[in-house]
Image (tube, one colour):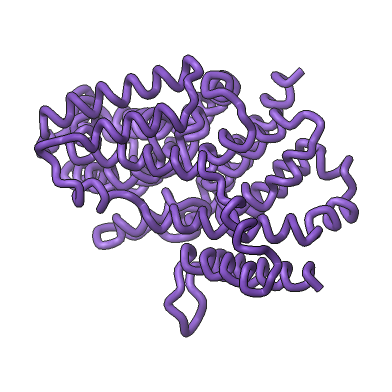
Length: 405
């Protein structure tokens, strides 16, 4: 009986999350997760104390504090400044493509990829339109490279932050294993976009007009120094929640920036989504449903790297990558080589986001932000997204399987 109730609540919650918004109701993904969590408690699948304990506060603390740090960088003008510095050295359309790919990919490795897309979409759109270039390949480069680059570190995207908390893999070890995949993926992204839009890169020379922006110099210095110190401490092994709390708290001590400006840039809906999903998945685990699924599939099959990669990639495009990670968490944690399994999960759920426009929030941010000026069609995206995803996921799986031995 408990398993039936848990399964019904789980399917209902994930159906709404996959759809984005159910017909006739104004419920978003965060609301669906919170409603699902409430139903797990109301129907006695979980008691309230178990629901509290199901929330991974390490993940929540790191994610929230990273949002505070990135909000300060955005308010300081860091992102347009970095973009302007790179654009000064661009003289050809192909160089502009490479600059966008490696700038967005590199910054996404250090900070949350969704934020990079929010900051850079208007800049990329404005530059390409002023130069008379087709914005589509450059906008695709922005979101696809943000997804690829974010796999390089634990702080690159929300699902990596969760996996870092669940697995206990150190920041430096995670980066050592994943950075080669990110670098290869970024190079492949450049190649595939060049091939798919070869006519748009026939122009020989361009002169990129300077981007107009405002810089809050004291905040820029403060937030940049804190960010660098924070990343250094991550690499040398200081616990991530401790470092993140210290960095965020220090940045909130200010005489110049109104706190509401910082809080307005925090993605509260994503935090609510995490809380709800932690409780929903705990209900599924407590009901025995996961063990029943493992018995049907078989531990040996479920533990095979290619099976895990395929299932996680498919789930990422059906219900999004964060829910996919939480759904597969109990299976991955039970595998003999858990570290490799966690890395495979991080790699596949992130790179699978390039398959379709709906595959990741970063894609949706870029497409929707650019919509008033340029429309990127679903099939327009697929002609690069499908081959890029298949090749990067397969090669990523082969690499991680090889380096684990």
